[in-house]
Amino acid sequence: MSKNRFNTRALVFAGVCVALGVVLPVAFHSLPDGGRVFLPMHIPVLLCGLLCGPWYGLGCGVLAPALSHLITGMPMAAALPGMLCELAVYGLVSGLVSHALRRKGRGLRVYTALVCAQLAGRIVAGLVNGFIFMAGSYSLQMWLTASFVTALPGIIAQLLLLPVLVLALEKAGIRSPAA
Image (cartoon, rainbow, N blue to C red; front, top):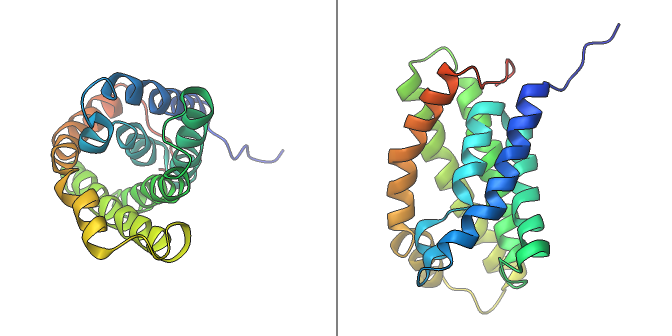
């Protein structure tokens, strides 16, 4: 009998993360610039990668913004391609680094995976926006402002909130054996 490549628990949790990726931004967009400042869609995607592994994280990073756009109209069509790439990289890299460091201490593993994913996703977003999706109208200053200055409260929230969530959910048994 062939081994099932999908872990049901991870698949269900990834589905919950996709749903959170649709619902959380709606709440934060009631605040002025809430989505760009607090990055609510990033949290469930990073969480999915950290707990379920790179492939579930990648899937969540693609599905959450796509479904959110279809259901709520957010992100706007112009921002959607860059966000799809950025969030896909967040989910993939957080899962890959977390898996690579699985024998290290939890805190080191989670923080390293989180910072690597945050940097990789922002770099990819800057590159695809600068060279493909917004070529000619996207500058280094726009990327730095959007990725690091405006988003600083969201980055700090992720660094404070996600390790606590990961530890609590791991204690509750939410973790893919492959992650």
